[in-house]
Length: 139
Image 1 (cartoon, helix red, strand yellow):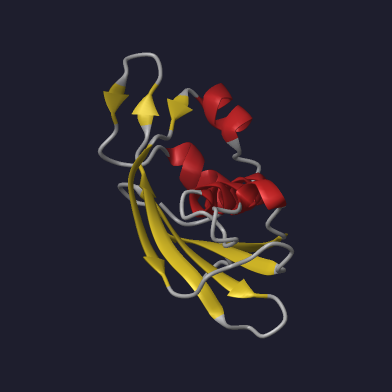
Image 2 (tube, rainbow, N blue to C red):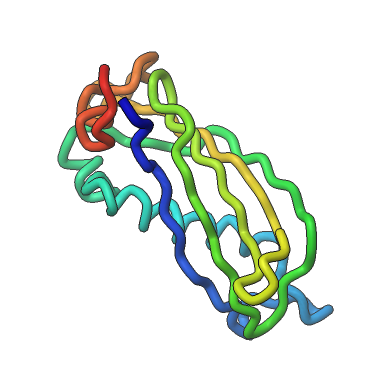
């Protein structure tokens, strides 16, 4: 059985308001770029935020690790790749931002989300079956 493709890529072009006083993308905006890619990825499996809420689970981010490799600038075309690498007890997504023209790595990160039952507000120590079903992975 082949491994399912649990990835998605989006293109981001930093806007003027994304820059810091040194005319490079402000470090805090990378989290916004990851969020855009994460939403596209989860929407690909019809399990975006609306579907999560409908399924009775919230998925807060509990950890975000980042590595800054190069600076990005106004108008630079960036490709943001998001890929789910873990889904059993938590949802882990790795991100890679690269320059769309040169392919150079700009930034990489990993986010970790956990399922919380919205009715009881309790943390789930195993991801709910709805996530596995949406991703098409065996339970």
